[in-house]
Image (cartoon, rainbow, N blue to C red; front, side):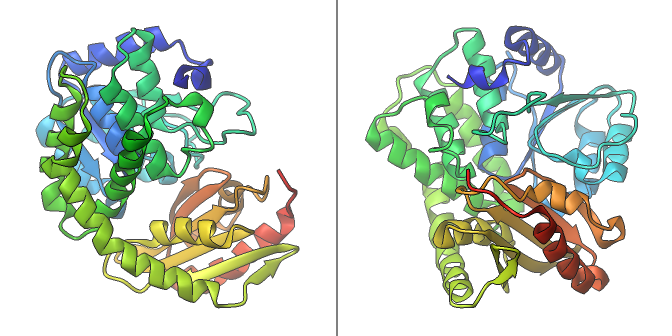
Length: 374
């Protein structure tokens, strides 16, 4: 199951270390999407106490909001799915704001500093040589494996893990590593995973997230048998359904427009580039949906935000190249506020004044890599 993805980590030992931190009062911070959310919910079960948990919206990847929260909340912090290496200066800020230890669980590629701050421990969830079938290692699947290493298997945990996989778009890719759910539960897990991603794009997410997180943490810590009616009738599922309905229409319209345009070409790789004009930060959802819709080449979505131009790249699953994270990391660093990701999915915040040069450089970087079928 999920544990086989993390054979380079002693899961039982890591489980004990993480529990010890949480029992001593460490707080949890997670990237505000389905994978990060479910990681935090699952990790909270390791501790005898209920940890303080904070969502880090993508807009706050400068970490200032998180650093302020840490200063007033906790002495030590555990993060899940937050690419702290997208911006080394931000990592320094977060480390200096944490009085005790900062433990980072992640598998994003980024600009690793020459030397980590003394109080930072990094757990790279990618094995030294990641197998081609999985160029990512979702943090939710890692925490699920930690729980299972202690034979703490639970249908609720299985449901939350599969929901995260649906949200990440890796349900099929990691099918043999994931728990098998009955069809009604799997369909509902898809609703929950997609709904979590939609929820965190809403302007109201900042104020509503604590209640959603608390409800999910309470759900995960229950020992009662899992029931489909209990999940469907819960307020938190209703919240996620409403978020999905609100966001889906906007994403579908943008993707339909993008598909009608002739793609650019980088060698023999078609590049679909589309602008997202919306008050919500849905650039990641547009990029992912466009990848599914065109099912070829590379999909690129960009959206002007307060911190710069948000750019998201997705590679068709039928391709084994180009490496999108490598393409971003090979480019002129003066273009970026932050950058990083995975070979199949990567993102950046580009300085507004550099955006034209960035787009030309991106096409050149993709063209230089070429592609080959998986």
